[in-house]
Image 1 (cartoon, helix red, strand yellow):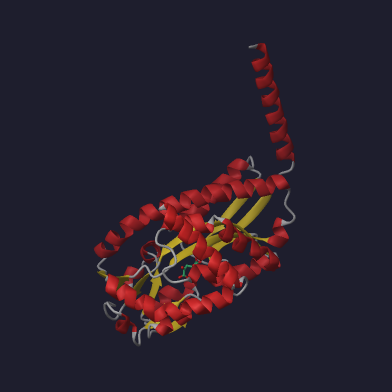
Image 2 (image 1 turned 90 degrees about the horizontal axis):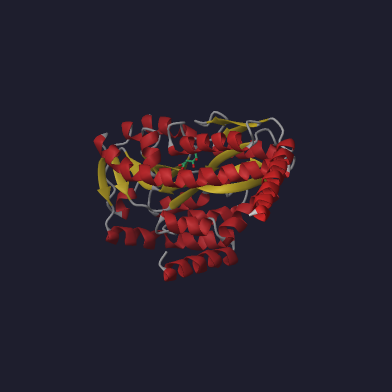
Length: 338
Ligand code: KDG
C-alpha cells in the first residue's frame, strides 16, 4: 500500500513539474484565425471551439481571435498572408490550396468518397497526412482537416435533373482548375469566384448558380437568391486548418502541443456538428421555399461518365503515386466495410 501511495505522490509531483515547465514555455500570444463563412456557420462554431480549447490548454496565455466572413480576406488572400507571416492561422478549402500544393487536387476528385466516415479515414491516414505535410515546403503548416461536406447544386433558373440541364448555366465555382473543368465538361459556363463575392454574384444574377454543402447553402442564406436545389453530392470537400510556418517555427514545443491538441478537438467537434446540421439543413432549405430534386442514379452515372476525363487531369496534377495510394487505401477500407 505504502509503495502505491509513494508512486502516486511521485507521479503527481512529476506531473505538476511538467505543467509548471510547460507553462514556462508558453508565452502570452494573440493568434488571428481567419475564415470565410459567418460565425453562425459550422465553420464559425468550430473556430470558436478551437479558440476556447487553445485558451484552456494554455492556461489563458494563448488567445485566438477567430475572424469570419472573410474579413481578413478570401481563402487565397489569407493563404498568402500566412506564407508572408502577416497572419498566424486560418481555415479554408483544400480546393483553393492547389495553386500552392498541387497534390491537394486529389480531394477535388468527383465522387471520390462515399461517406464522411470514409473521408475521415483517408484524410487522417497516411496519404492525407503526407499531402497535408507538403504544405510546409511552401510556408504553411497543415494541422487538421475539417469537413466542408458533400457539395450540391443550386440555381435561380431551372431544376437540374440531367447533364443536359447544365447547358448554358452560369455557374460559380471555386478558384480551382478541376472544378472549372468538371462543370465545363457538363456544359455549364463555369465562372471562378472567391466565396466572399458569391452571395452578391447570385443576388445580381452575375451567376445563375453555385455548388456547396447544405450547411453552407443554409448558413449563407443562399435560399434567399436561389430557387432550385439539385442534390448531386458530386464531390466531398474538406477544409483544412493551417498556420504560418514563419510563425509556427518560432513557437515552443509546448505551444505547438497546445495548438495541435486544440486543433484535434475542434476537428472532432466540427465533423460531428457538421453532420448533425447537414441532416436537418435540407429540411430547413425546403421550409425556406427551395424546390428540391434529387439526381437519379441514372443521371449521376451519366454525370460521372461525362466528367470521367477530369480524373486523368487530376492524376497528372497529383502524380500517379498519390492517385494510386488513395485508390488503394479506399479499396482496402471498402473491403473492410468501413
Ligand atoms: O472561406 C470559404 C471557404 O471555406 C470555401 O471553401 C467555402 O466551399 C466553399 C466555396 O464554395 O468557396
